[in-house]
Length: 219
Picture 1 (tube, rainbow, N blue to C red):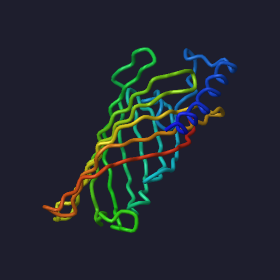
Picture 2 (tube, rainbow, N blue to C red):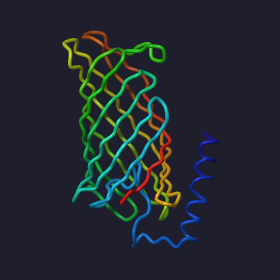
Picture 3 (cartoon, one colour):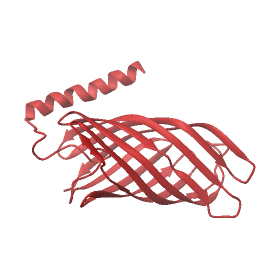
Picture 4 (cartoon, rainbow, N blue to C red):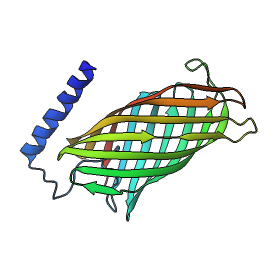
């Protein structure tokens, strides 16, 4: 925990100082935001990002459209050897000073190999994913945002075996503007995961997601 605090301090303090030296103003064009921040891209705003972590890696594309944002992403869970393609929308519902809040909802398709070398409870299948979630952002400076992240993915099997998986994950992150249109994200979430391969064979265990990502604003 101490190492994590020192790492975040190392990232945040220089970024705030560089923002002050560069004379960024929140009243002008906002430089921050590609991976998660801001909670919703402005109309016409476009971002591309990628991240690595445990248990997954991913790539995504964000597009601001009118009063909401659309996002398309692909994720690969290297613990389960499963891949997913997802599309979701996000809408800002609160802006109060430095605080922003936006719920999201999406839909995806999951292809799971059933590999058990890293997850002995894993099961194979094709599943539909429903993706409710929530993102909160609090600006510490022109180039730094603290993030609150809630994800509640629901996977439902397309076969007749009543396969399902549900996660309730919550956590924190920080996104820092590095310059030249690039933003760096570090985030972690923990919670519960419940799943079953077939009816009557349910399990509940700890769930988690840790990631470091890099994104760029294209427009």
